[in-house]
Structure formats: structure tokens, C-alpha cells
Length: 394
Length: 144
Ligand code: SF4
Ligand code: SF4
Image 1 (cartoon, rainbow over the protein chains, first blue to last red):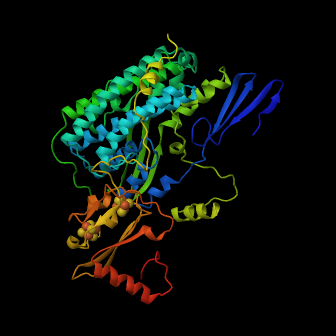
Image 2: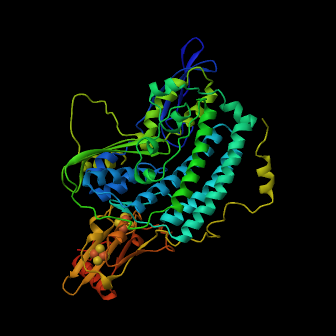
Image 3: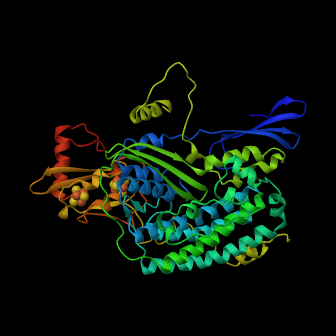
């Protein structure tokens, strides 16, 4: 698509849906006056997969594995949120050791996610050296996760009522060693992002969001915390192991892109501290409690802090072994408003940086797709949707 | 403020081995817990089917030849398996395990993705019965 002229000197520049700065689909339109962006809009829904519908046709355990596939980066928090919600409905609590292991894996996952983001954001800013080195170091935590859980992406740590992997002494030593190395590297990266002139030129004073704006736009996670918003589910409503291992909140007042870099890197340091704490005081005992197959009727809300911010699950049970309704709201969805509202006033070249500044994840926030046909209204079953999908792409 | 804050990293790396590996010529040793191909040991199986109930992707099926004498054959569809290990977790008799060595399962045909586990004579019996009933049957279609 070409830029479209809408007035003297004003153009609309479409970006996406293919590869809009990141390797996921989303469509953005920026109105530009010369170099300067004057308006922005976003269109989502290109990777709607019908996951919520799919959960209604599976039992709770099967649905948990489906939820784990909502996001390929923060797979563990999704399964944790779903397992915690289901356990709440069933009236059971996973044993303390299981809860601590959930938090341990959650923190390892946060480390890999933030390091991944550091690379992506550096790449968008044209700083490919930082991208390559941060991703090289990220392999350390990927190997730790693979060694601990058996897979690099979908860790499958949770079961309803506990976890299925334990931490033995060898694992513990490996994790501590890896964390020491990563901590040293993170200090190095903090130095780079706060002193390297080329990166500072692209981040300081770009995409500034004040605390008031952050509240108004509903920003969450590190994006909100970089504007001084003191919000973190691990602190506000501790779940899993965070009750026994409290988290220290990391915030920054600056509110620009630089602050988003700093907050995420400091969160890494906090994660390292937390991992050491958990490993030093890992509760002993069982890994699981017995969970019923049929979950008593009721509804619940489960909130966890994903690497990108608050992840929200609503689960409704009708007393059978399959959920009646699962609603997911992923953190990326909350942060779009900040991108759209912050963009005006900055250069078009800053857009990929502002966009990647919220650490967006497209496929995980596509919950809805609107079909423009007002004349008919129909309810589709999972099987109908599946057939439609097969026919559509035939 | 500085320019080229990563110059040091680059210079140091010049004298180090590459961080990448020449896969498949070089292989990274897999961790013990790696969840690869699923294996089934029929000797202890009671036929309780708990493993199948929670499989998120319908990848396994237990074909009961003779319940009393515990003759079971497990059909495993590798291409459906998500390697979640829920079946291993569910089995109380340790019949199921996952290999940490067999994880490269890509193939050009569908046939290698269907595996029958069980005592040799049971698997033989099952496959023969399937061909008898439908001589035209493709190997990847479910036996009757
Ligand atoms: S590993 Fe998971 S997907 Fe594969 S057969 Fe077992 S339960 Fe099914
Ligand atoms: S759970 Fe174990 S014992 Fe039961 S059918 Fe499956 S493999 Fe056999």
C-alpha cells in the first residue's frame, strides 16, 4: 500500500498488517504532516484463533494446555492463571512447594521475555549489536527452563492442583549459576542503555507518558510502571508463591522510552533476587493435591502479572468437567491506547520504537473478530468454527 | 555518555568460539527432562484409560484386544502430540515415558507419525485384522 494524500502536505501512512515492526500481524495508520505524526489508529484481529471457544469443548486439564498456547512467550503465566482460577472454583489450594515452583518458573519466564524484548526494542532502534548479545545471553535462561521443565516454550509445569516438575539440587545449582551470569550481564546492559549516545538519542524524551495519562489510558505492566504507576499484581494481590516471597515494586518517573528500558532491566534484577530467595527457602512437601474432575458451579476471576502486565482470566463453571466460559484479557490489549495517544507529535521514524516500547504481543490479544453482516445472527459451535476455518483456507 | 558502548563486547567476541552451533553436524546434549517422543510399556498397563482422558490433543488411543488378559495396544499419533506429558503424569502405573533422545520427528510421509505400541504379537494381530477387514486401507487410517 502507498501513502494516501488527504490534504496539502498530509498523508496517511499504513503500516502492516504484514510485519508492522514486529513479526506479528497488526495494522496501523499514521497521519503525517511532513515527518511528524499527527494521528494514529490501530486495527487488530488478524490472528483470532477462537481459543476461548475451544476451551468450552475441553475438560479443565485439556483447556489449561490450550491456554498455555495463548502466548508463545508467556505461556506459563497463562496456565498458572487458569490453574489458579480453577483451583479457586474447586476449593483447593496447591501445596506451598508447588506455588513456589510456579513463581520460580514465572520469574525465569519474565527474564527470558524481558531479554527478548530488549533485543527486539534495540533492533527497532537500529542497535543490532545489543539485539544479538542480549539474545545470546537469553539462551542461558532458555536452557535453564528447558533443563527444569523439558521444553523451551510450552513449559507444561502446571497441573490442576499443583505442578509436575520438582527442583533438585542439580537444577538449583544450575539456576543459581545461570542467574549469576545473567545478573552481571544485566548490569552491563543497564550501563549501555543509560550511557550509549546512539540509543539515548532514540529513547530519551520519546513517547513521554505522564502518570495521569497512564491512568487515563489504562496502561499497565512495565509500560505503566515506567510512568510512575505503582501497579503490579504480584505486589497488590499476591498469588502463587508471591505471598511467601514478596516482590519489590520497580517504577520510574520519567515516562519516556528510556524509562521503559530501565524499568524492565531493573525488573530483571528483582527477578534474580526473587529466584535466589525462592531457591534458598523452597518449602518442602508435596507437589500436588487431588483435584476433582468436575468443578463445582460458580464463577471466578484470576489475575496474575505477566511480563507485559496484568493478565486477567474469568472462568465460569456449570458443575461439569468442562468450563462453560473462559474470558481472557491479555496485557497488550490495555496498552494499545497508550501507543495511539502518544504517537502524535513524534517523528514517523520513532513509531516502531514507541510501538515496541509497550512490548506488544498481537496474537495473544486477539479475542474478537467482527464480521460485517448485520442481517443474520447465529451462534457457532467449536465444530462449526473449525469447519469454517478449514473451508475458508481451502 | 559514550559512543559505541558495546565495542568491548565485540572485540572480546572476536577471540571466542561462535555462540551458535552447526546443527545438525553438532548437537547440543539434551537435558534429561526433555519431553520428546512418548513410549508405552504394556506390561503394567491396567487399561484404565486415564492417560487418554486428559490428553489435550487426542493423540493417544488404547485399543483393547482382551480386557481380562490385559492385551492392549496403544496407538500414538506423533503428529498430534503436543509433548505436554499430561498422560505420563496421569498414569499411576508408570507405563508411559518420554524420550529425551528422540525429538527430531519430522518426516515426509504421514505414515511414520502413527505408532502402535504393545506386545509384538498383539500389534501384529491388530494390523493383520485391519488389513483383513479392509485390504484397501491406508496404513495411516484407523484400524477397525
Ligand atoms: S504428551 Fe500430551 S499430547 Fe502427547 S500423548 Fe501425552 S497427553 Fe497427549
Ligand atoms: S493411564 Fe497407564 S495404566 Fe491407565 S490406560 Fe493409560 S497407560 Fe494404561
